Each structure stands twice: as structure tokens, then as C-alpha cells.
Image (cartoon, rainbow over all chains, first blue to last red; front, side, top):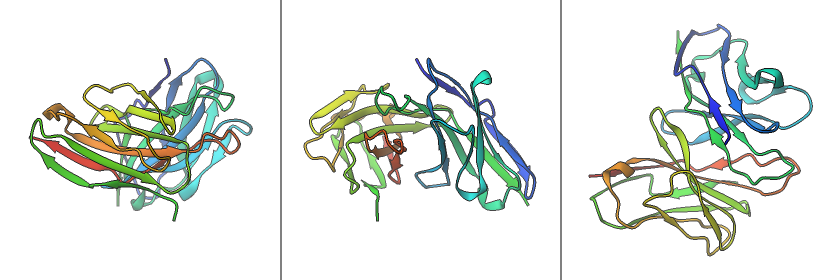
Length: 116
Length: 115
């Protein structure tokens, strides 16, 4: 069965500092990979997704993520964090686009705190 | 505006009193799903539907029912709620199409408390 691990429950960074949130997955094939962000009291918003091609993908709000097949990882990065980035971030995996339905399996989330 | 609408946003109920949380999407999506979010556990899938009259269990279906009589609506039914169903619930939808992928659109969530 597929699984997603986000090893960092909480991360605190200073505004303007760089950010990397870790995500490791377990899946039988190369899955479809996502990062979502959840601001307090809000639903989940898609930041970016990867299913093939260039392993470095760009998303909204200045985020990017790199797919590394050899490490089964899909880490999220941002060069300079803004106070408004404080939120909870979820990594998710789904079946490859060749088939298998649409079910997304989510990690347990990483809570990001930004210090001013 | 393309969106998934859940109602209510907040609900406090008593053990055993049947309730329904509604979910509606205006994007003509085939796929709809319910998740619950609990601290430290992330989001776990309750039920999903690939299309009208096609529903199936997710990872944590016990105590829940769903129906999909129309493409746009996917209500979540708790026939006899219990305190362990206190949680934050999200409805999501996506297309089944392969071109462009199937990123989910989420509703704003329903905070349910069962006392």
C-alpha cells in the first residue's frame, strides 16, 4: 500500500530565510505527487504537482519541489519565506496517470511557523 | 467560480442523532471523496465516488454512509454519530481525465463535534 512520510511535525524559520519541507513516499511505481497548503480555518489549496517530465516543478506562491526517484522523495522548497507562509503543509501521492483511480494518500502534515 | 461547497461549516450534535453533511461541486467532476482530518493523523479517506451511483469505501468508512444520486452532490451521512467521529471533514472533487492530471479541489471543511 502507498504511504507518505513527512518527518517534521513542526518547523520554525525566520522571515526571509530559506525553507525545505521533507516528504518521502512508498509506492510501487512512480506516483503522482502533490503538495497542498492549509491556512488556519481554511481548506487545502494545491501548491504544485508532479507526474512526469522535469523533476523540478514550480508552483504558486514561489514554491518549488524536486522529485528524486532514487530517494523516493518530493521535498518542497522556497528561497525566502514570508510571514504569510505560516500554515500546515501536506504532501500527497496518488496513482500514476496510466491508471489506478484518483485516490490521494496524505502525509501527516508539517506545521510551519514563521518568526518575524 | 469553480468550487466545492460544504455545509454546515460548524456542527455540534449529540451522540446518536443522525446528521448529514452536504457537498456540492460545480465543475462537472466525476470523482468525489470525503476525508477526515485529525491532529497527528493527516487526512484519511472515508468514502469516494468515481461517478453517479458508483461509491466505495476508503480507509476509515466505519460509521459513515454516502450516496451519489447526482453528479454534483455527494452527501456524507452519520446515522448514529459517536464522540470518536468528532473531527474536521473535507469534501474534494476532481476530474477522472488523465490529460492535465487530477488535482483535487477541496471544500472549506466542516468542523463536527459529537458530545
